[in-house]
Length: 445
Image 1: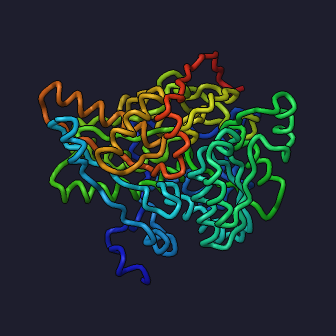
Image 2 (image 1 turned 90 degrees about the horizontal axis):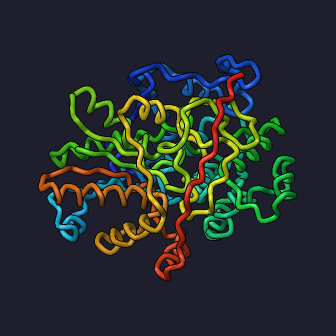
């Protein structure tokens, strides 16, 4: 392959790992909101190609990665695993801190692991155009990049708060020929109603999903692409953990704790799911921490129930931790974590006690990010900084307890497009937001 001299082709996984067969209890199925019955596979045909629908309901443990997808992965995979020795020294901790660096992909995050796969399968089915939502812009950038690789048009509904705060993410998407609009936009009836009620509406991922779905279902040449939450998305991300398993073995260690930030759950799952498999098989007492913003704490404050994936209530119902599909998070800088729900598979693992949620306020998160950047040089995205904060806390706890801990976290994306947020933090202008709980009802008829 043409990239063989730059990256080691043989170290890129040849299959994705599907955790569904290994869950302690069967995963509750998506449900039709009108009938309350499990959604048949063809119920997703207006949104996704048949290959992704099959992966969504797949009961096999391994799914082969198509060769064109692996060839695209070779642009940036395998990604490096670093040991944060300078940070360990700064913290004076006996802990060993490792991080899997996903910021080296062309869009700068883990998101292309699934964007490339989704674009490939849609191209195979003859789709001409994809729509999607994006919070901070990482997913929108990844899909714009993937659509250019496979010759598809791309329309991105970007959460308005991020559209205003992160203009260069928009420029990056447009450089890859995507059309980007702020959401809520005047382009869909639901969003027009929201703008009429509040012209300065900050938007949310749930609203942007509603717009992207409405756009996709209005045209026969268009499908919708989702950057997190669903099983096929989490499946594609497991290339992260499969690589990290081999790299940790090369380092001669197995993690005592595995950490990832969570909005919808994809980067956490991508790293953690293969380690959950191995830890349970070997009887290792590894802890798995899913870190979310205190302003949008679906895992730690939400209800585990069936809810819509979008604000306009147009998607199938998913059994997940949710703050309610009408919840609009405050405009924190970790835009990719401003989602009311959580991946059903991650939610099920939390209910089983295998994964633990933890929530942080954004000023503490940025403080940890700056400390990490000053020690290691890498600047985390605000989303990634939540995982950094947890890793620091775990390392400090190890110091207090006087015992070695092996800590592994997913550095899911760089913060080069987030300097405005860092400027506000360094100037002391960054504010914390408090979650105000509201009742959440199950939507099973």
